[in-house]
Image (cartoon, rainbow, N blue to C red; front, side, top):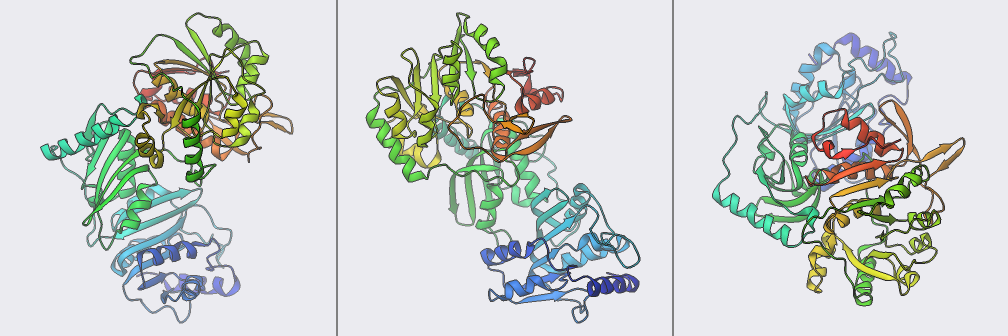
Length: 570
């Protein structure tokens, strides 16, 4: 049985009395439309259709939708199987005693794809008998285990109290698990070795690949290059499997998957892009071959370049012609310590400590962004200043160049920045990007001068300094959060040319920090970055979200945190 008659009656009464009940108030119909259009689905079923919002929207785009809802008069006839089944805001309304029958019914009806959403918290409305309208409230883990008995999970997102998932049909119940690791064949070893050589010939010191391992979903171990070859598409939870590859790929991954009528190339690209920055993408027959770097993302945040690719390349070409000098890539590590002065609010709190450290003979001070003038104001002359932002207003962060500072400026920076520096000592380097690296090499540039790293100049300075031989870095004021003084939110240590950012509150280990969506991505980028090398020691100074996260991770027995000292964080 799918529904009891008493419960059917209660839902019919609620539909009649509440015009918003079953009306897709969260807009999932647009998501379903996107899936239908991009995968060419014309055979569509709305399971638990409510008041029929999906059918109306898809009808406006020339698609016909079969509707089923046992609580809607005229739509209670059992439906026929369809290629694409949509089931949004339904399962939390199912009587617990009937949930197994409903999931079995969904499996029988789904010929290719099921898209569903589930709420995991109480509803804002009640049934006529007084019960909350969500009568089956379970957490995401419970639902995941339940659904995987009937479907293969393609995508799974949990945002607050909402689960959104795409599932692929499988004609059996139970689970598929690897029982033993496969041996890497000589052909695959050679293939991955070729990828290793290609990467190492065109990457900076931070991205060099030294170790290779196959990901099998069983007894996996981290390696610089992780290969997942013809396995992901066979496992029950594709979303979790790709997450496992990303966690074990310290620098990059090779993934081979098969395209089918259930999972198209369009599907593979968007689910892989959830975990990886794609560097190479090749379609060979029914196989996709992908090489990419793992990334940690903040939900709802999509990184967009401040300047489009063509304009950035024009600036790169102009800079390479204008500036003759290049950074010096160290042949080996050295013992000098780099003090990296970022421009978070806590720089004002640690400036005296920084001044004491700067006086030591084995220390080189490096400023980024607005920290250049801040340090000079406090009597500290940095050895280097780093900038990589392509926008013109970044030149306003420097009043004037200092004759004793060497300016390590990315070729992508605006010509106006170079104008501001005038006759200063400038050395050029390049921001490593997939679309520009090959063009740099073709133009005769050294690929070792193309520096990888995260989205901020502070994050990019870490692999830059690593390429220059530094293996110990003391980082001040990479706060990834703001300082609040009553109603005023201080976003930097002092004057800054950037625009004010939208703020949000972040809870870390019981403390609320004021941050922004982009700063959250920088915080995740930091931890993602420092895992890539095993010979880098970092000490964090200041008080902010990043330092608090580091202190928290140190208490969680996270292996790579042994090389991060957050004891100096206020």
